[in-house]
Image 1: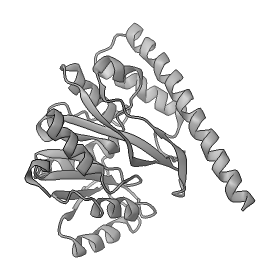
Image 2: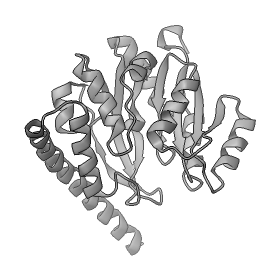
Image 3: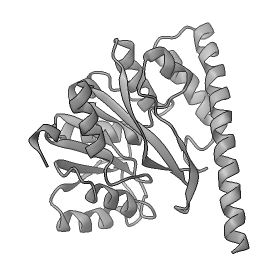
Length: 269
């Protein structure tokens, strides 16, 4: 790899809790990256299944994989913060333990950063169901996105982000009653920056109705809490919440149509 295509060490933070069913796929997708200057910090939040044993096995095979453990169950936002304190790289990438990356995800973001000087980057998102079956539809990533645009719809999927560590740390938000990742991106963009997107489905996002984002009512409440956290008054928060609901309905209508079609094809085979 040419030096011009390197931004140095990327610290990948993966929060994990009882993730034995999905974490192998997530870690394998990191190991398969064509950009190889990374460390993977898997921060376990007191799992009670085989998550820790699985991560330990990976760490024995590749020293770039590090297991970090919370002493007490703290929730996802604190868990990622714990990983951030251990990170050695100047750049941070996030990958949830139930998601996965395409092999060239980091490389294409690094190349875009070289061209633009961006400090926050993201990608388009493909989707899979809870069992890992891919859904034939993806969420496009605009070339750039501003604060006002992001307020209307969070197109910056957490597991697709690549961000300067100092920026991520400065705007970090802790609070599991809101979308803390959304709050971070809004905080960064509110300061006048833009996020730069790679319009390819380089993230494969797992749809799980049991997750906090899978419960639509709970997700909407958390979204409202995020708007209030970043300083929107109730009227502005209500305006953007309407946009959030509308965009969300359109997105999941497309996903449901594609998922139903795929299930019907499987049933008819």
